[in-house]
Every structure is written in structure tokens, then in C-alpha cells.
Length: 74
Image (tube, rainbow, N blue to C red; front, top):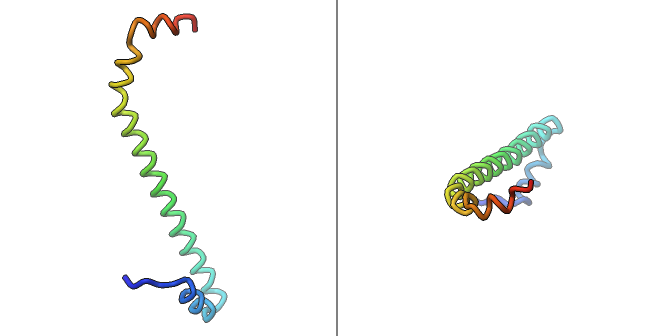
């Protein structure tokens, strides 16, 4: 895909009638929201994967008599 500059987009937008500008605005808003949603979904999946991978390591550290006695008063 060819690279497009903001200046080129701006020049084209200036020739659109007002009712078309609202369509462009809606589309750009959709693209931004979609990218944000994708980013959040990827981050959420990464967090879950990290949690699952670290579970065994944490269990070995936490499931010790020293830890049980340290937290027994709570």
C-alpha cells in the first residue's frame, strides 16, 4: 500500500461535502476504537498467559511451612 500523508488526506477532505465528512469521521473513529480494542485484547491475553505460566513457580514459593506460619495470624 502506498504511503499517504496527512496533508494529502487533508486536501481531499477539503473537497468533500459536509455530509461526507461525517462518514469519514465515523470511519476514522471506528479504526481508532478497533485498534484500541485489539490492543486491550492482546494485553489481556498476555496477562492471562503470564499468570498461568507463573502459577507453578509461585506455588513452589508459597506452599512452604515458613509461608504458612508467616501468614497464620491473618
